[in-house]
Image 1 (cartoon, helix red, strand yellow):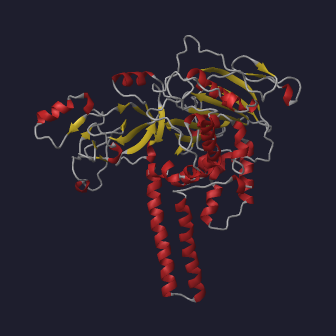
Image 2: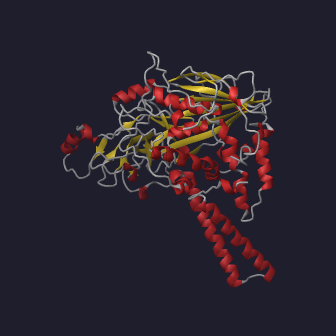
Image 3: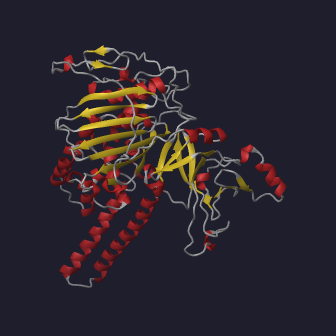
Length: 561
């Protein structure tokens, strides 16, 4: 990744933006904005290709997981015959922890709707207000804050008439109220009140019915990231307590003063979780897809993968080398975590990209990511990373992240839907007995796709070849407007962005109002008055462009020279 820094500055110098100062800022921070992933998750993986003494591509020897050696790396590997070990159980999608969203982005005053494996869930905080009682929030004591509480996740359906609880309210006594008939539930999902009943015995009778309880999922918060176990009940609580969360861990031998931990980013991406994993375990795409941000499509793109750890139901790892000598280890921890580690120099400096994903619904996934940097032994930030660590508001970081994400989202969104539409490949299979697709037969793989093939083999051999979404697993059609949709993908879920958006709109209104008053009243001389009008109107137009990024973020490779 040494070339990232130089490429970032070259694009910063070559691109000229005439619309506004804020537009220039969007370009200047794009790389830092999304390169926000990192920490630890070590695993095992698949034995990699060894090259013969000849340097020609045609004599490269590639060994796939079936143990068959192929001379031509462009030849699709044969059907995989590998069977899981007898002591290796199949991966169960519903008995695993999934990352959903950083809690710093959530407003504890309201319930939030998300999806996991096709299920609608409501995420909310059951902290009561200090001395708070059930009733109108207008009666809340001035300055009163919520105390304690936990982030909860329920099936997003009231047991009464199945309307969404995410359209309800978090009351001051720490209960979740359904806005249809005001049934209320505590943090465990138990029904606490039915206002339509006159007798307490009637309420107890309904409470005794198991159907009155919301399906509460186990939750954990690790490093500020909310994880959800997608099953409810006593068995789920026990099983989830025994299963380790696949989160990245900081190296034990690194002191806190040497760590720089980046800001979290969240977005529901317009392609499925398996395509997200496929993308991030593919180092070959970075220079091309992210041209002018982290590399150049016109640079030396040769890479060599020479180290791997055997594939198991828990994941795998690959190691890649670039012509510059930089080496990166990419580790996949099933089903939701990818960690990319790059060591730089001999002073202990390293960069880790921490990438998390969970299947939200067919054709979409929840992605959370950040960057972690380990400084040198002197505790100073290496010059290579100083640009990435410049201070900026979190909301601006979130807005800029879309610029980076959309660079390859355009490809992956259409790739997934095209393969599904043509019948060449799909991870949306109906029924457990359906024969899984062989991804290598649907595409034209080469040695650089080793990480991709390892993941697709993991999915086929250990995970049933498909993501078992509940309810209708139909693939939605391709639509680039969905790719550019920042509002539904991020903004509406993020308390920080919603607050910033409201404030920016106020400033924009004020700027245009001042410009209008200056035109009408002309309080100063012609030159000064004209300059003031242009300045305030320009500020308003710049803010208008920035505000638009909260709703839509478009990208075109054809215009990215």
